[in-house]
Length: 166
Ligand SMILES: CC(C)(COP(=O)(O)OP(=O)(O)OC[C@H]1O[C@@H](n2cnc3c(N)ncnc32)[C@H](O)[C@@H]1OP(=O)(O)O)[C@@H](O)C(=O)NCCC(=O)NCCS
Image (cartoon, rainbow, N blue to C red):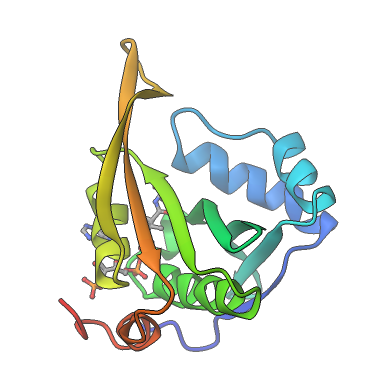
């Protein structure tokens, strides 16, 4: 399936109920709607993916000084594997560049192979492990820390054309 017609636009307050519903379907330990509202209020880069006339995903990037942190990126299960996350990530990387971030950090569960594959095709590299970072059904789960240096020119092209790097 293709992502034609999908559009990324700034998140609005009235998206939040739909976003919280997608979040609840996507994560075992989801953020509450209030956390998304806090992200909007804090002035983070909060973007909504629209498809088929509704909210189909979202991404949140925090930029401080010359560093950016990708806090959340999620696509509605009904809209996955159509290239929407790649499109949304491309917009977030453009925003990081516009804000002159030199590096982007993110954390991801080692068990989240789909997300790790997405980030690796965009040029992110695994650089560290944070022990016991996430809640898990039994105890805690580590986080893999991934980074992308924004001076790696190849990045946006790689995100735009699947398979460019991989
Ligand atoms: C990870 C996630 C955002 C991918 O969204 P998506 O719209 O399905 O991804 P895309 O269709 O844009 O795929 C882009 C790339 O991601 C990787 N990918 C996506 N789904 C995958 C899967 N099920 N298995 C392996 N790789 C996958 C592939 O590298 C893919 O490139 P390809 O199509 O050329 O193989 C989505 O699965 C999701 O929302 N998961 C739950 C939330 C989450 O875990 N977010 C990340 C938190 S760090």
